[in-house]
Every structure is written in structure tokens, then in C-alpha cells.
Length: 114
Length: 112
Image 1 (cartoon, each protein chain N blue to C red):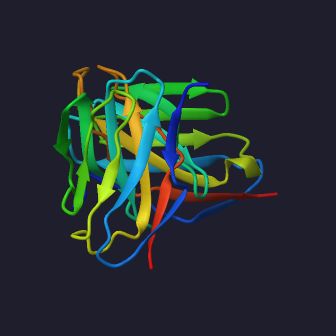
Image 2 (cartoon, each protein chain N blue to C red):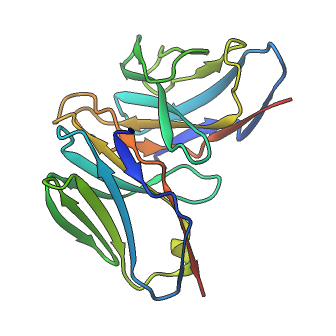
């Protein structure tokens, strides 16, 4: 069993839909949670970063962490064709030390069609 | 204009050949990383370095080698011992005590 599980999709939605992307994990030591967006043939770019449980909102994006269930989510409101990309969840148990190894999910391919 | 650069964008390797992928950053980050990305498998860590002249193996280091002679540079060599090198290679960096990593644009390695 992988430490981080992410549904690879693909996920196809119409423009304006609410998108929910999810990851589950098994390592209870994970404290830092990130979402990256990766366009085709490009490097991943950091989208959201959260610490421990709770919600964090940034524009149309909301990241949610439920440590008790070992479950994280990324919600995209009013989705746009420009949101079409692969979304990767990543997590770390570094706790502020000088090195934080990230463990990634497999990535979910999202397509938003006009 | 701060960031991470990787070169070349595409690289072709012949059988038995060693090839070197370049990674440079001007973010003044202490830590640098190399990942391999295969379809449907996410990112897997090859090597990482926290400071100059020091580096550690990641999860899939066999068939790869690195050096860290300068803070800004972390080249990756794919040796002939790596039997399945075709993949998308990503370099990343992060500041000390910071979990978030920032990625370069990647190098796609293909075998002739």
C-alpha cells in the first residue's frame, strides 16, 4: 500500500463546476500538506500549503485537511478551462527541520471543458 | 528574475552512455532535489542535498549520481547502469526549515 493515494482520474467537468480533488494517506506523522498544479510538459507549481488540520482559502481554491481521517481535499470553485492540468498532493513530516522530504500522490488529471 | 532553470529541455541517450542534466537556482535556497516522473506514478525522489558538498540518496538512487560543488548548482548524471532512464526529470529547491519546494521546468530524457 502506498503512503499517499490519489485517484488518477481523469476527471472531466464543464466550465463553472465545483471540482473536488482528494488524497488519503497512512502516515500519521505528516503535518504539512501541499497541492501542486502541473501543466502538460511543465514543472509543478505550488498552489496551496497548509499545516495540520483545517481549511485554507485562496481565491477560487480551498484546501482542507482532516488529520483524524487522514484525508485532504482541494476544492476549485467556478472552474475554468485554464484549470485543466494535473493536480498533485504532497505531504511532509519534517516539522520545521532543515530538510523536508515530500511524499507525492500519483496526480489527478483534470480537464475543464467550455 | 529568480527561479530554477534546467537544461536541456530534451535529451537523447544512446545505449551505454552517461548523460548529465543541469539544474541551477538563484533563489539562494540551501536544499536541492532531483525527482523522476513517470506516467501514473507521481514524483519519486532520486537524490537530495541540504548543503554544499553533501548529498543523500532518495528512494530510487540506483543508476544515478550527483554533485553539489556550488550552492546554486546540482547536476544529475544518468549512468549506463540505469536500465530504464526514459522519464521526465524535475529539479526542485527549498529554503532551510521550509517544507515547500519549488520546481524547475523539467528535462525529458529519451533513449535512442
